[in-house]
Length: 139
Image (cartoon, rainbow, N blue to C red; front, side):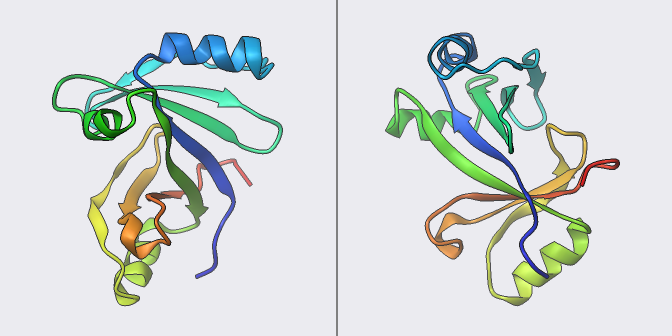
């Protein structure tokens, strides 16, 4: 297996509404998608397009959200994870596990509607890493 395309950079935020203003007014983003709830993941999500990838804004959905722990340590928010594409999610999971990496849970459907899983940051050079199956019709 080789690393695939960087799909997005996950940025945790206490407020997607305020983060949208920042990306629009300060960073000059022109394509900001409608925020949506992803209760199965415990987050609210909004994608901001850039010329070569996306920023995934993630806000806690409720008190049980896994993002709450990150925001407790980083109250203003910040970079949460990187997401790379792979052609086959099950093959990628087996590859990471064979390398001794800690896969966090079983593959599940992510914000792009394709299977994902996360790899523990201690096994990924200190970066929480999301692995996602390449969406159909994408490169």
